[in-house]
Image 1 (cartoon, rainbow, N blue to C red):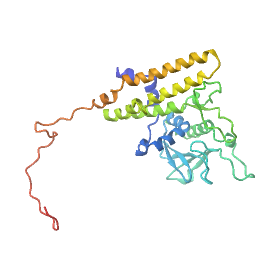
Image 2: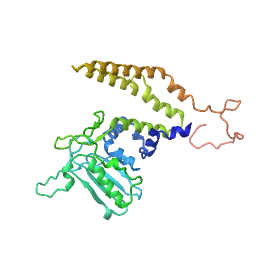
Image 3: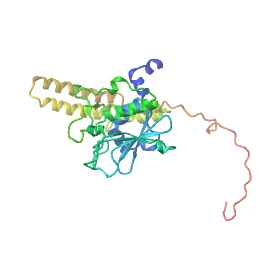
Image 4: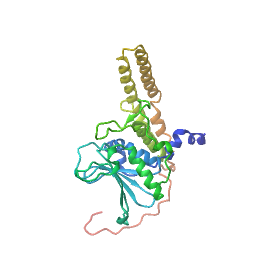
Length: 307
């Protein structure tokens, strides 16, 4: 049974992603929001086995990517002058390969930031602005040359997604010219996938229960938020003057009801998961098992203290 679960497509995909960073900020809302905003950069790199983190650079947030040889990539917007654009949506990306032990080997892999000097020649990638797909392709190409890709990217990962793909995909931020990027990512699906990664890495039922609470909390959990999402989608469908708009409205309303019903059916799941923790063994005296305490020993009072 366990082998079957490990071979599911979801389990295989989760296992293929590089792990999340291991620091306390990972559990904070502000860091999780930054991670969500950079998912179109971090997710393709994690699929290639590269560990990523979000840090603050000189004036803006950057993505730090650890490489197998101890070097790293720094991916972010231009740091000087500071930009007022939101994190994850710069006018252009700069990716540098840095060697802590040998600065002479550092290099710029990609620079699509607009130049402040009108007379200065721009790099060819400047035409891509804030688009992520050319950035990932350039990183792929250079790391492949250096033999630093733990997991080779698939051909489909390098192919821009057609604009005819379903509209349920969330587009990446628009580039500096205002044209929508043709590359798409499943941002919200990746957030849930990250939660699944953390669930797979838990070491106790109590930790698993805390993550399960994120889904099943009746007020703010994912199922309740999905119910609200489908209700909103139902109202949008109802606004249509087409006959199918009303049918779609009721289908989406039924979906919201089903999700809430599922949450009600599983309302005890968090407590049941937490109760799966093994009971702590105790002695007949009610003390935890362990070495028997030795006889009391005399202690010498410390000068200046009263016992």
